[in-house]
Length: 77
Image (cartoon, rainbow, N blue to C red; front, top):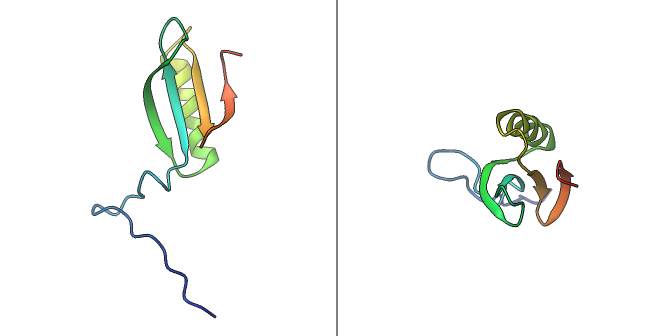
């Protein structure tokens, strides 16, 4: 069986941002642009938990969960 080369994790042992393909975004109050990326996650289950927490912590704000460029969840649509 061939040896698979895995990209090394960062120096602290956490995955690189390239591996954290899910992003939870907080949008500006006018809903026109991303204010900040609240968090990145490695798995969809963790990303969904972060998305729900972001909704609770930011009532009335648009929160978007992305996998790469694809929108997975969006409370603003």
